[in-house]
Length: 166
Image (cartoon, rainbow, N blue to C red; front, side, top):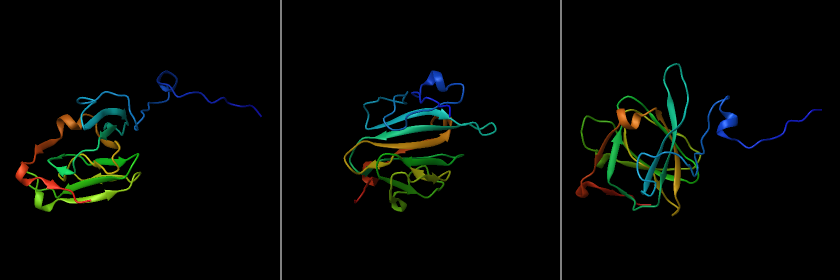
């Protein structure tokens, strides 16, 4: 029987077949500083779906106070996410017509690592929280550049912020 030798995955060798990215401990471009408490590694891999290009990205959350102090939503797309290396705390609030997060309607869920979520358009949410005092890597799937052209984000005034009880 003939054999096939295993080779190390590389951009150059795999390019003719597709693309790849390390979603855990990524080394990719970010939308801000790599030293921030929340780091979004953007558009790491794209998937062609008949003219629509979802991008697979990583959002790394360093341990931070469990205070909900900002929210966002997308008007035209679902946001898919999956905690990769640890369980996560994810908060959501119902879609509404307000320009402010409906803080009295916030719900927080414990999401086991490897569990994929799809958050509907308009639903308020923001970055997950790490719970084991280690950085948390979460795969995010959005249309390419949705964080620029379909993302409404707001800060929550200090008096309305919510502390997560865990």
